[in-house]
Length: 288
Image 1: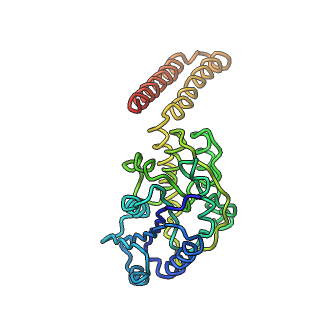
Image 2: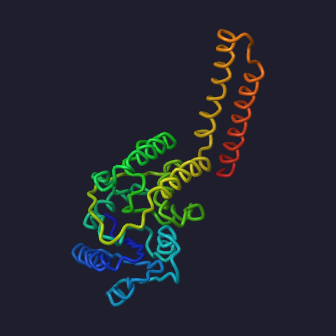
Image 3: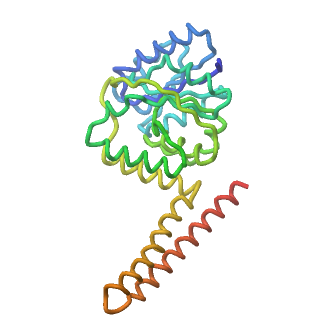
């Protein structure tokens, strides 16, 4: 197991849970006798989060003057991390910190190890589950791999690999989703380790409708950036098939063949395919 790691805890108005999280980390660090640094990034809290832990021993406290977002807090922590391996977790007590050693063990041969929440759906309102299912299926298709947990907030990563994508990673809650997609679409080694997931302390910052739409947007945008043909090929194929279907059906069931519609659909398919191939060429050229 890797003994040197920077543990990054982003916190925004988490006074209720942050102390217990820090105490658990310090106890685990002492028991394992590992060289960990604990970094807490207070993302502009107004409830006294920083004051709660400012005197905690062996804790590096970094404050944002105003709320910049979950991803921004993590990026600040990563930039300040002194070790090659970084671990992120939440300040609300939902993640089992005692499983951090289980994430660090495979890091010797992996670029990222994600704590996959086994009972994640149990803590998600029923109305949000269809959207989550669709997002996961889309991400699985676009990356070509089954992703047990797309946006888990407990994970270990190599700092130098994350820094390659730091300019692409968003400042909001979609940070974890984006880094997962970025690593998978760039053939980095990503492992998933099953973990439990607990009820959080305090109030959730997730906005169901807005954040779900943002997740959908970023999944498509990220894959367009790294593997554009996964998006353009199906759309192009749809127009090709539609042009053939219109031609055949209009010939069989209408007085006049819809030749103009057929040509428009076919040309649209050709144009979309051409744009996708150009985008893929640009992507491959930029990596070489």
